[in-house]
Image 1 (cartoon, rainbow, N blue to C red):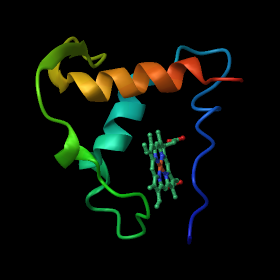
Image 2: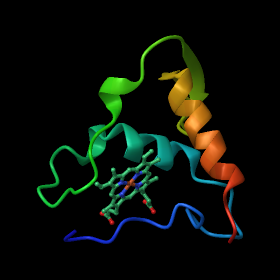
Image 3: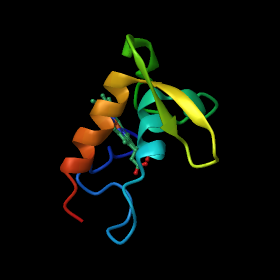
Image 4: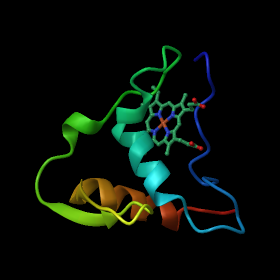
Length: 81
Ligand code: HEM
């Protein structure tokens, strides 16, 4: 691959909160659409069903597919940093 895949056990910095919004955005893929060097597929199409309102840090509650939130929470449990 032109870019190495991320180490999913070391997302973000050890001394900072888990970057859940970044992780969910990355997996969803929306903000990567204009990057021609992208390797990782966009997974936005596979997340269906109920949504949860997630605080995206700007005071806005964004409707976010529940499976995407669950995946982010799972990745958070894997952190070793
Ligand atoms: C359940 C499946 C996957 C999950 C949860 C996942 C998650 C992530 C996350 C959260 C990042 C961003 C890390 C960061 O910003 O530090 C990332 C980066 C990356 N992923 Fe995935 N990924 C998955 C599948 C894949 C697949 C199938 C590929 C390739 C075929 C892939 C290739 C990459 C690459 C190359 C990067 C680094 C991109 C860059 O540095 O610009 N990922 N992944």
